[in-house]
Image (cartoon, rainbow, N blue to C red):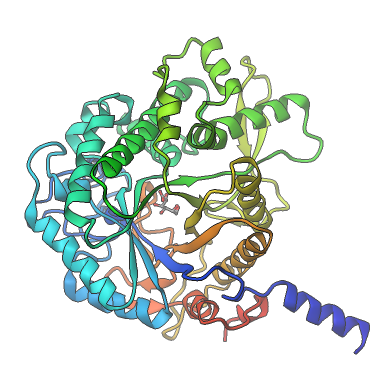
Length: 487
Ligand code: GCO
């Protein structure tokens, strides 16, 4: 074999993303969230969530854009067809969320049995197709009245959520043995800040996902309450002796600086890592909040409502798995001429390939998984979200959608995950965000993330190239980058 050919075949081997080398009973899945897919926002006695308010009433994503129809996933005729597509794809796991406002329409009052029956039927239908449910209790859709009472900024949210979680466990734990309690605290808080700004007619260019300045206090306070709410739910689960395991889905952002970063850039990057990543991991696995972030809050006299015993309580709740949502790293630098010591800003280096949620960096996915292995005792991990969308990519032409960039993204990230598993990371499942194109919050329907294309006018579904290739990976075929080609 000529040297060149050897190099070529080595590359193909290196980039192979097969289903081999994953633990037994590995979950190969896809994910979605209630408000992004269900529609039927007035059906079966549903109450209003803050997203009904933001989009249906206040049109924050633009005129006529809301979750009132979405991809019609609440409808059984429709979702049965979707489950059939999942089955054809080979999924053995599906992550979806239950809407709090369907189960307890006003957030705190009586339980709505029609909604309980709906989700019980959905779970029965999934399981009949051989697909295991991974059920998220809360994916951003805070009941409107509770949001008006301060939402996660109010310490009472811990009890609000605990009661809701108790209702879910009582009604579903005979059918479901793995629950994700809360989804993506940091991104939810940032999105809410952005929505509230829009309500006032102001616009932020980016959601304040890297909290600084006026947003730091609100963010840290909410993160603490969200972690406490998860701990409280886990205490109830344990006290009742339910069988199964609980987790929380956290979006992690490896924090990078660019070449020639200054000491100030590096110091800000370290704090951003403290706020977005270590804040959660340290509390859960070490029983303390990171000292550098607490000092920053103290120096600024912020009221973040961290009380003695909070972090220990979060640690002692002992969640059974860590849900990781990974999309992209952040590149951080210190803002020019900033008066505050900690004044980070996100930058998008020109040499990076960019998806909607940031730079495409599978190497950082591996680095994250191995950091959790090395610094946090290698807990069981389920990848609860990983995926991408690219400007202008999802075009339906002659009945096909050749989403080559999404396909490459998935192949390369699954490969990176598999390498980390081979190096000992305790990863037990992987879920693509998302099964279908759906409502991307304040961005409306423009940004597509699905493996299944949705025509929003007709609700017709078309599995994309990425779905076909993901199915092959699940079936154990040797897939590499070269398989992601349009035909
Ligand atoms: C989440 C995510 C999803 C998004 C996805 C694509 O909170 O889990 O924000 O809801 O749709 O991350 O941006």
